[in-house]
Amino acid sequence: MQMKRLRALLRYAYENVAFYRRRFNTAKIKPDDIKSVEDLCRIPVLTKLDIQRNFNSLISREIEIERCVKEETSGSTGIPLTVIASKESTYIIGANRLRHYVENGGKLFRDKYVFITSRRLSNERTFLGSLLEHFGVFRRTTMCTQDPIEEVLDRLVNFKPDVIECYPSFLLLLAKELEKKGKIIHPRLVFGGGELLDDRSRKTINSKFGVEMFDLYGCTEAGDVAWECSEHVGYHMNIDLLMIEFVKDGEHVAPGERGEIILTPLWNYAMPLIRYKIGDVGTPSDEHCPCGRKLPLMKVLDGRFEDFIILPNGRVLSPLVTLRYFENIEGISEYRIIQEKIDKLTLQLVLRDGYDEDVVTRLRNRFMDKLGEDITLNIEVMDAIPRDGKLRRVVSHCLPRKRFVF
Image (cartoon, rainbow, N blue to C red):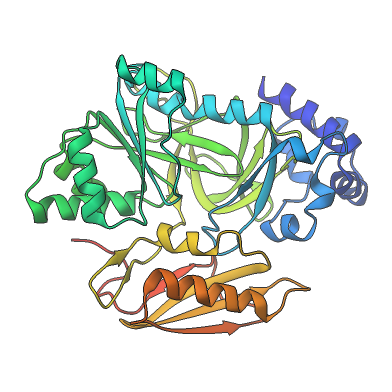
C-alpha cells in the first residue's frame, strides 16, 4: 500500500509540480525509476530552506490555492514555514489524529477532552455541536499556553477532563502548579507531543497526574508521524500515510542506528513534500511490539530540545509559547531567542531577500507587548545564525541546568 501510494505521488509531482520536474531532471531520474525504498536515496532531500525559496513552484498546477488550507509551522528548528494542503487532505490529517487517541482507549463520543495549544482557538459551538454536548457527546474544549498558568489550572479543575493533550513542557508547568496549589486532576489519558520528552520529565508528569502518559511525534507538515501504545516500547509509525526514512551520509541506516528523519507525506497532492528533512534524529527498530500491532517501531527521538524563559515577575514561558510571537510576520528566514539575563533577551534574525527593518519593528512591538516593559530586547539581524548541528531556537543562560526540571 505504501509503495503504491508513493509511486502515484511521485508520478503526479513530476507531471504537475514545476519544482520536482526540475529536480528529477537534474538528478537524471524518472518516477518509474523508484521501485523500492532504497531507490528513494536517488532523490535529493527537501530542506526547509528549499521550501522557503521555492514556495510557488512547489504547488501543483492543478490546485486552486484559494480553495486550499494554509498552515504555518511552529518553527521548532528556528525556520518557520508555510505549507499548503487541499481540504480533502486535511480530512485525512484529522482522521489520523484520532488514531493514537482511539488506539489507547479513547472514548470518542463520551470523553471530556482538553486540547492545550499555543494558539488561541475558538471554543464557539454550532447549534448541532451545543446539542451534542448537552447530551454528553463531543465534550471538548481548548485552552492556550499563553494564558496564566493559574487560570489554565483552574479551568482544568472545573472541567474535570478525561483526556488532556498538551506539550510536555506545559504539562511540567501544570504538574508544578498542581503541587504548589495542592490541587488534583484525575484524567484517564494524557498525551504529550511537539517536544522532546526525557525520562525525568515523563516520571514527573506521570506522578502528578496519576497516569502513564503517551508521547506523540508529528509535525504540521506531515501530521501525526508516530505514537506510543500502552507498552511504551517505542513509537508506532503511521506508514500507511507516510514514507519514513532514517538516513545517515545519504544512506538508510540499519535498525538500532541513529539517522536523520526524512518524511514523505503520501496524501498531500496540493504541495507534495518528497523526502522532506524535518530536522530531527531518530532510530528505527526491528522489534515487534507486545501489543500485537503490526505498525513498525521507532525508538529514539533527538531534537526539539529547548530552554524555558523565566521573566522578572517569575512567569515561566514554555518555548512553544514564544514561537507564536513570530506568527503572521513574514520575511523571517531563521531566528533564535537568547535570554542573556533575567531581564534581557536577544533575538537573532536572518531576513529573507526583499524584507527590511519593518519586520524588525513589528517583531519588537510584538515581543514587548507580550513580555512587558521590564524586559530589555536586543535584535540582531545576521547573514546566518551560528549552529552546531540542529539550531536551538530558544537558549537561556538564566537556568541552573539546560533543562527545566524540578
